[in-house]
Image (cartoon, rainbow, N blue to C red; front, side, top):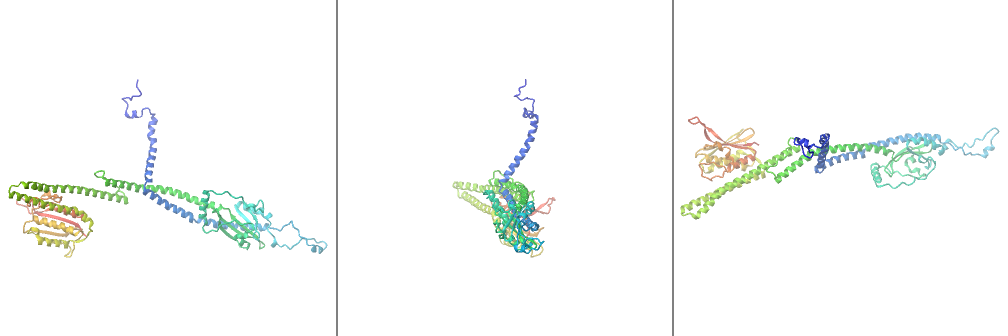
Length: 598
């Protein structure tokens, strides 16, 4: 019987891993976890972005611009002004219609009969007393009881407030109190508004107030306190826009009630407190909804933009930090050069800078190692000579040891001078500003000095210039002292390898946007295996001179100077005539320097 607690040796690893799990569960579990993993990664990504200062600035600035735009639209929206004008015009038309209906329904009171006794005595037989006819149509007052039903019928569907004033400015009718025609009792006091309501009222008042006057509820006898009612009682129609204490816009119009061209009173129509504000609020809510959608889209786009900026910048900063700490021998800066933007340029610049930095560090390390090696040889020789000097038995041995000591001291002095010059070279080239250098004048001075001193050799120097004319300056950008050091070193080397009475030829010419300087000698030339090595630090190959007469830094320093000027330097042998066996011969050495022309 197979023990279920032990794995079957014939089972595969996949079967063992899914043993005891239903087949559909084993198949669905990885698929079920995929959305969770995706959400987890997205959460980590946005969490990392949210803590990025650059991301926060991008999102904040974009949202600030959008908020300023939406706020400007809300504040400067012309919809509110146009709505108020349209509402005022419609109220004027409505008021004129209602005023005409009120004038038509205004009649003399029929429940009062006036009798004149004198006129009764003057009646003739068959005549009837028709009452006093001293009331003309011009004296007919507005009857509130007859006008109230008409006003209720016309005002109820409009959701406006109507008030009728008599010619003295006293209130006759108010549509709020049509059930009791003349009810002047005030509404019960409202509850004290809360903090939120007060805040909304303050914001709404700030948005709506502007330069509008404040609306106040006047008493029944103070109808003339409303400017539009006062004008209407004078026969003129007028509209006014005010703001109440809750920040709600109140539009009111007043028209005279005329009958037979006589003013019987004034009709005042006004909007409810939230009538216009509801429409304005609806419009502002629509603007806010659009602003909210735009803000959501802007946040997403800002995060995507920040991810393309903050992420690469963070990676570049981390790599630069690792370079500073030098955790590894060589840290690679992320390569974003495929991006054609500032991030790509920054990545390329950092990569080039890091490569140059590592090259400089390696060069310094190699230079230190070479210096230690070169200084160790004369120091070892000097130490041996100093230790052997007390053991010398005769004057000849002591003199020979003193010569060795003197030779090693001079060699050390020469090495230290050349090493000091080489170590200061980079710093000096970076501190000094490059200026235009006239090579014709510089080379002429160097050739004159070489011919006057001849550097201990009877070898003359001849210069030739191949240009567009005798005044061609052969100008380059650089440091004249260091370029002069290069040419002087080349002339000195050529003279030291040339035989007495021969010449060193210096040629300066233009070559495709470059200035070429060629130094030829008639010496033995350079061995093929040494054409590249002669520019190495501390390398020297002078069989005709004693050991230690040269530091081997001259050509290395010259190459370093030319490289700093963006030029090239190389050595080659000048071919000579073939010998008796037909083999090629060497006529001498040639050093070529090319510098970018100004």
